[in-house]
Amino acid sequence: MAQLSRRRLLGASGLAVAGSLLASCDTAPRVGGGNAAPAPGSTATLRWWDHFNPLQDLHKQVFAEFEKDAGVTVEYTAQQTAKMGQALQLAKQSHQLPDVHSNVGLNLPLAALIKDNWYQPLDLDDDALGRLPDGSLVEGITTFDGKVYSFPIFNFRQYWAATWFNKDLVSKAGLDPASPPETYDDFRTSARKVRTAGGDGIYGWMLALGQPDRIAEQIGFLAQAGGFEGAGGQLFRTGEFAYHHEAYVHAVEFWLAMEKDGLLVPGTQSFNDKIARARWATGMAGFYFDGPWCAGVVAQDLKQFADKLDVGPMLVPEQGMPVTAYRGPTGGAFWLSGESKQRANASKLLGRLTTPDYYVGLAENMDQPPLDLAAVEKAEVHPAYKKVVGMFQDSVFLAPVPVVKNPDVARVNAESKEVLPGLGETVQGLFSGDLGNVRAALKDLSDRSERDREAATAAAKRKGAKVQPEDWAFPDWKAREDYTADRY
Image (tube, rainbow, N blue to C red; front, side):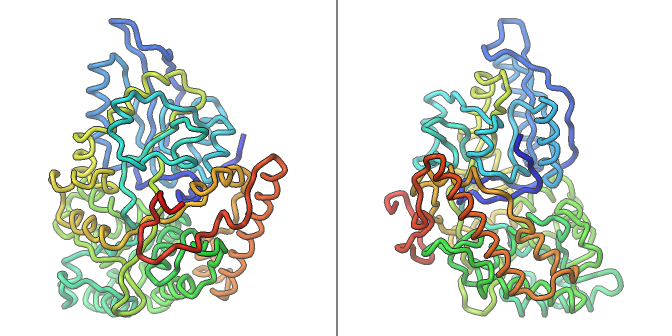
């Protein structure tokens, strides 16, 4: 079995894709059901794990309706983002995987996971397939060899480093909540004012420094906003790895300067996003970088903080730079275990996640924006959620995806090894002092990433893959434009 460690969200290259967070791990034995529909009067059981904290109530409602209509009980376990990968690995080792699960924490390429029997195809009916917008299913991301393995429920127009803040602390510091900071310098000044006005135990900024995957995501988005014309460390036009690009260096140095200034909450080296967000909501810090689901987590788990919650755009290095982010087509949210005997039941249940009512439910639970963005206007949501989703529409653009250009890139991905230390671990090492030079550490990551891809490409070619370096390059790519299907 392929060994797994930490989450990598790299949908643009066909890796495991996912979203926000929740509670505990559960690896109890699965109660199996048949693949055929249950006989009248009988009840099958389908086990489901996911990490989408704000969606718990919505999914419980969907599951209850499915049980009533189909006679199938759904045994639902909510997982915490930072722990789910390990829970899934342990469950697979003991042949106790849930029938359906999200794949956060599985850092290997999807092609490798399918090859290792993590997943099997779905049997979605024509109605469910017809409700998916054109372009939702992408070979190498949600379909493989023409078979549908998953589908998106979220829209790709989002970034995960919005500037969320405590309106009370900001106002106490003499700042205007209606004009949140926009640049690195503005942010440092604002955080310093919050720290000074707050007194003992109040800091400017909270960070989930103990969660390397979240660090990598946020630094990656900040680098894009700072001028990096690529994703996952790779430049779109050439396909080269360039973690040592000035935009990455500047973003990391900005974070390190915040700590040096005493503006970062001490002890964050051990905080994952759940802990960091919860402590921030107690009033420990003024600002916190997070994705759109922050509003949903607050509404569900941190209700006392909801009236203090507000949000500003992702930061840019200099005044006048437009906020810019790039994401590939959204990956699948839920996957059917390769060992599951519940293919028919699971497919029927998953088909219910393509309806207009479900999209409105997604919006009202305020996780990532729903695939159908029109649902946000029909939903009752926190003002900050509507604000941040609106920000995304003018600043997030569809990125080119190598696996769409050449499906054999998935075979290279299947041969790839995890590059460690990755971006998140590298940033952790710079904060701890184990690594001393930002640019040198990031250049080393670029070199190691390039060598891994070269080795994976050679291995894939030996097995018949037809790939070349140009498959990762998109010389016709243009900044702040969607790279649509007709351009491949």
